[in-house]
Length: 254
Image (cartoon, rainbow, N blue to C red):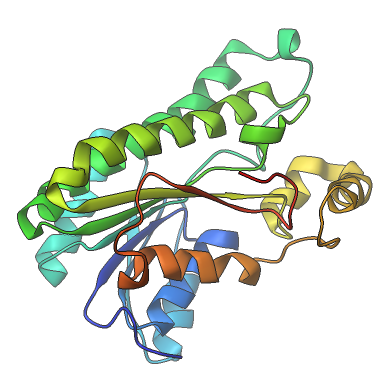
């Protein structure tokens, strides 16, 4: 693999497992120094990267708390002297309680938006000082097919992921003067632990129905998304900002 991200420093939130872990591993393989951040332990991710000869530091992060986000950014800067890439992957998904929109608990609604939207805002605020000083940076936010197609019985999740697209566009406008790019990707359901938890005993039925609506009719794997992450993180996309790239097997066309 080409070392397109040599000497770059990348923070990946929600990196203890699933997609976040996959992003962290692939960014490290591309040469980036990786900070794996999560509210749960990231030691497994760190060990995978180190065993492959990469550089990785794990950081405990609670995106609901600005002080925690600021501490993550400070630890990263103190260790590596810069922050080039932020992948805002941390989100409530597998643990969410779904149901009719008028039966959702208000606390579940508030928790979902706090993590999935405000958590991105807090992490961006934490790293932006370093990126502005460098006059460079790439922020990659993780949206979802649910933002465009609408996911029934998950209004809180669909709403939060739609807001990610709006946040991405507005922030790209605001930060372009500092040559900081902001983009998002919109995956469909991916074969991860979170998807298994979210759909529960309806997993096979749900993923089959989703795949049937795609031009490419199979369930996505984490590896299907990493090429887009690497593209948006690298100079290959140096004039791309404010965009949402759908990685959904051809479900919606923008």
